[in-house]
Length: 118
Image (cartoon, rainbow, N blue to C red):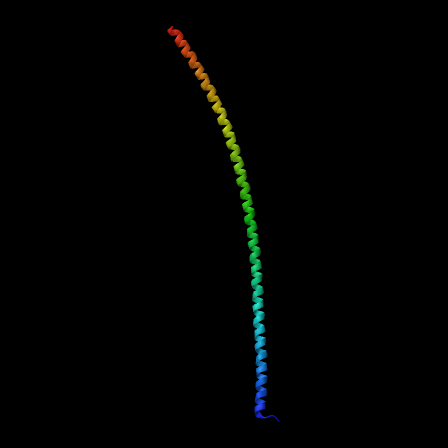
């Protein structure tokens, strides 16, 4: 027969083992909860990353379209400038021809005037 002290020690040991097992179960449950939270967070991060990649693709598409539009505008401006320059050169040639005609007429006028004085 066990002494009261031995029985108390046995009950105390069993209580410690039970308490230790309970603590382990609680720690395991907390660990599982944390693991679930980490997985949920990771899923959210993956979802956010996918959305970011999609937005980045849209930004690249808009950027490409803007570059194309700008290039087209610059080509049109350059073509318009070349056309205007060609027209200006043509008008300048006409002015120079008119000026030459005016100079020629002035010379003839001076000659006739000189003939009239003689």
